[in-house]
Length: 281
Image (cartoon, rainbow, N blue to C red; front, side, top):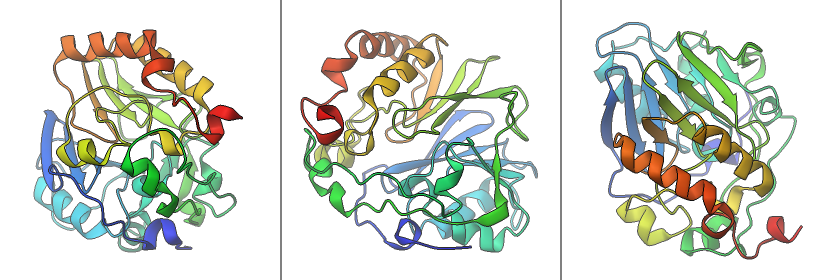
């Protein structure tokens, strides 16, 4: 396996919710590490569980600690599912896989080049309209990692391995192979970064985790047309609860659906920056 700056370059950014967990549903636990959420699927005490996303660089030990406390010590997940492979969602992946020897990693087929060493992401746009996090984004790594044969494409029938009742939905824009996860039985949504519940380009709001529904992080979103279409796709699901890659989970259905409609209706004003290289292109 090949490491890169996406797994090795620690980012000294945090929030007041760092090291806090949120019980979103009996089998959904959201845990914040610095400024990003890691999701544990499975009921407490169960031996079979799934990890969704792998956090910031150098976060593997904390992920293993939370997993051991929630499930069973020394019991690896059945699989790791990636919403996408930006550095803050795969930062702990290589370290985890070196200990969890036989655990497969599933991602959309268009995201596989970024975890098999074939392609790097576009550079962040630090000149994009936004707050201090956007200005600092030039420091964020975009190098691919290489986990070799551990990387597997998600099933073409949109099922999710070891997550019965869930389906994956292609929600590109923030990345070409970005996915979200949805369970129809309780209308639970794991949105990844298709939309987030914090203004991610603002340092103050990232630190304080003030809740507000926003489009994907501006500085790492190269395709705004597809990003808008993806939010529309998720809105048509009418989710009753949502976990996003950044910000606090939402279980207030009325707030979630109202704000999702507002974001869809005013996406260009609320989400798309007024200027930036991916907007200007």
